[in-house]
Amino acid sequence: MADKITARNEDYSQWYIDLVRSAKLADYSDVRGCMVIRPNGYAIWEKMQAALDRMFKETGHVNAYFPLFIPESFIAKEAEHIEGFAPECAVVTHGGGEELAEKLYVRPTSETIIWSSYKKWIQSYRDLPILINQWANVVRWEMRTRLFLRTTEFLWQEGHTAHATPEESQEEVMRMINVYRTFAEEYMAMPVIMGRKTDSEKFAGAEETYCIEAMMQDGKALQAGTSHNLGQNFAKAFDCQFQTKDSRLDYVWATSWGVSTRLIGALIMAHSDDRGLVLPPKLASRQVVIIPILRGDKAAVLEQADAMAASLKAAGIPAFVDGSEQNSPGWKFAEYELQGIPVRIEVGPRDIEKGICIAARRDTLEKSELQLGETLPRAVQEILDAMQKDMYQKALLFREENTVEASSYEEFKAAVEKGFVIAHWDGTAETEEKIKEETKATIRVLPEEDGYIERYRMNDPGTCIYSGNPAAQKVVFAKAY
RNA sequence: CGGGGUGUGGCUCAGAUGGUAGAGUGCUGCGUUCGGGACGCAGAGGUCGUGGGUUCGAGUCCCGCCACCCCGACCA
Image (spheres, rainbow, N blue to C red):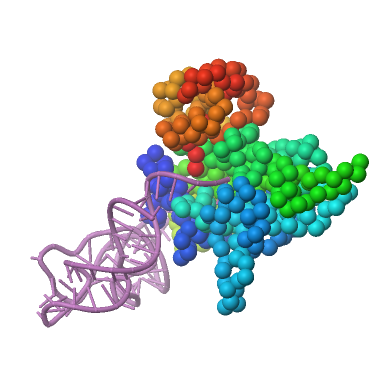
């Protein structure tokens, strides 16, 4: 037996680490808090990038690239921003053997360096909007790290847009959080709750932060993407004004939005099981593995396997054959389940005689017989499509089963250990802080989705779960990663 | 930064009262296997984190240092 994965119900976080390492998604590096993203993990990121990049471009954005280094004075320009980020920055003090006149921060996020450029590019409303995205790495000197979920250096994309009116920027903020929501649901097969953050959970320097929150299999919440309405904060900090259509002078309205390699962690924790990774087909770079059972006329079996792979590939289904004789079929079954290949096809002399093959889907482990021949690609595609849908439904059902409405604080404290809790909140930061201190649960999101709001009657007034004061609405509490 | 722990083949670990390093797994070769992580045989692989001390002799005892992990405060 190779690397054994700890069972989820035994030790969830150990399960996660075991899975990441044995599926060869990532490895620890020799640099504290930094990970190596291995080919299996990077392939997932590439699929995510491809889908997101297309969605960004479809919504009118273009890609660009800004420097890794940010002068200290830039970071300091926006008061909340420096307060939020300075303590967790890596700072370069020397270059070329000389001490630098001004320290350079390794970007923790790029608002400041980007706005220093935008100020040069924007004079008139005719220069707006600017809709730029960049794919980059950033560094945040976190105290504690976890593979994919929180590492010192991580990969992400950050969109930074500039607009002439607050209406337009708010529209952009919502457009992008909805792009993330669509991506999470349709590609990651991961249900999310879209909504606003409370003031204390907002991005440093934002007027309003919108997010998508997902539930992991241990009932904890994971913030999977954010979209910020920055108001005129950064434009004011960088003195970025423009002439409006009616010849007034105004500061530019800004947004920023991003998702990171953390999404890979989310994907793992949302779907995978004790055997290993479970990947939604749309994010699998290899969707089908064909395992020939090599006995009898080996050459004939291999030939059949190769022909099947060719027909699947011709139909646009990425398939490959593992015909190596080093490992037994049983070993291969286990290995590709560990790696999360969505569909496994077994084909041996017995099957060829009957004109069939055996297909096993990764999420349910169900096996079915498929006819060999020209109908095969369609049959496989049906399995892949069903899997993509079923994984979403399963995750949604799980979230619903682990969401409770609490009407007393006692009930709240018990429920928040297991999942999401919907409860009335009086709207004060004090209450939020007290609850966090006492239970470690935070307000994850003030939902903005009609379906979710109706389902849990989020806007019904009531009394605060903690203070007993009048509460205008309910919010979603959970412990979070 | 506080509290706890660990450093021994690639990995996981064992080495009792000090006597000159071992297992499982992985790796290499050959053969038999192959429908749920097969087996036999033969092999390669270790300055025991690091610096000092005690001793005839240190993986083991003493002191310093370093690194990493876990729990808390920070966070996508």
